[in-house]
Structure formats: structure tokens, C-alpha cells
Length: 218
Image 1 (tube, helix red, strand yellow):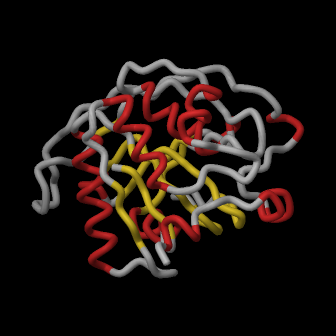
Image 2: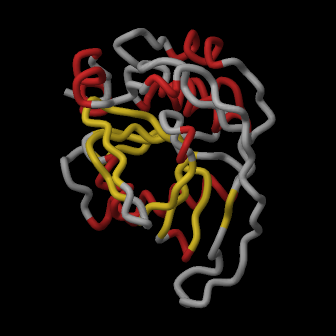
Image 3: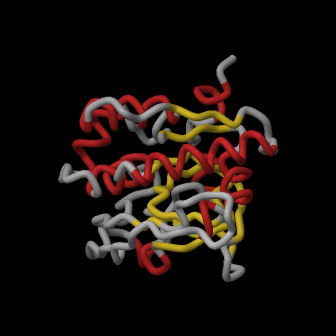
């Protein structure tokens, strides 16, 4: 059994009962596009990496319904690379239905189809990320962002960001990783389900455990 395929599909019941990509009444339509401020790579003061910080410009849109988190997150990633598709167009390519977007294999396939084939699928197969998997995620995210490619991650469960706010998607969800700082130890997330708090920073190990049992496109 491939855990990317079999664990990353989104169930309608899970989304509606436990959160997932479900939206509240105030989030029934696209949010106005916003852009992240550009940030250049600078010298690390910790000595472990010459790259300290990177933040990509993206065109943010909220997902318009409970099952479009995959298309919305993928579209955010595409916007940083000059690709302006509608969420409906991306959903058609992904094979998204009311059951969600099947897996990170699909986001990788569509990102490669539209941007030239540099994305690869990473997997964290167990329920908790191993230290080597956290390190690999850091390396993958930093390389992709340094190349100008946001990362699309399939997550599940609850993770707490750097200011202490929880983000809970027990039924599964897709988010876009658009920046790093502190040599990759902190990751900025664009969340298509939360236009009121659409970008937040999260420690790397928490991001890895949020992805655990699923996968990401980097």
C-alpha cells in the first residue's frame, strides 16, 4: 500500500465533521489576492547554512468550497512561477472531486506539467517524522524556494504556529510553503482555507509532523 495514495485522499465526512478543508460562512468566496513581500537570501549567523531567509511573492486566493484546498494550494504555487490559472482549471488537471485531491503525487504531476518538470514528491510515511525526514524536508523546501518554486504539502491533524495559533484539519488539507527563515528552521505557510490568517510561520519540525503519513511536492 502506498501511504501517499491511500492516506492523503480527503473524505467528505472527515472534512465536514472534523474540519479538513471545510469553510465557515465568512469564507464562501475567493479572498482578494495578496502578495508576500519579497525577501532575499542572506548570510546565516548560525554557521550551518549560507542561506538564511527566502520569501516568494505569491498571488493568494482562498479556496471557494470545502474540497478545493488542493487546487487552491497548487494555484498559489503556480502563481509564483508566472502561471495564472483558475482554481477550476487546476482542479480539472488534479482530478479533484468532492472527495478531495487524491495525493501529493497528483500535485507533483500537475506542477510538473505546467512548470517544466522540476518537482518531486517527498513522503513521510509514518505518523511521526524521523529526524532524517525533517532534515530532508528542510533541504527540499530550501532548494525549491531558492529555485522560485513554492512547495505544496498534504497535511493532516492539528499544528500550532509560531505565535501559538492552532491550525486543525483532521480530515486532511493542502497548504503552500512559500518561505523560510533561520536557515530553514522556520517555514512560512500560505493556507487557502483561512483568508483571515492566510500566511503564518511554523517551526520546521511541526510542519514535518503535520505532513507525516502523507507527502509533499517540492
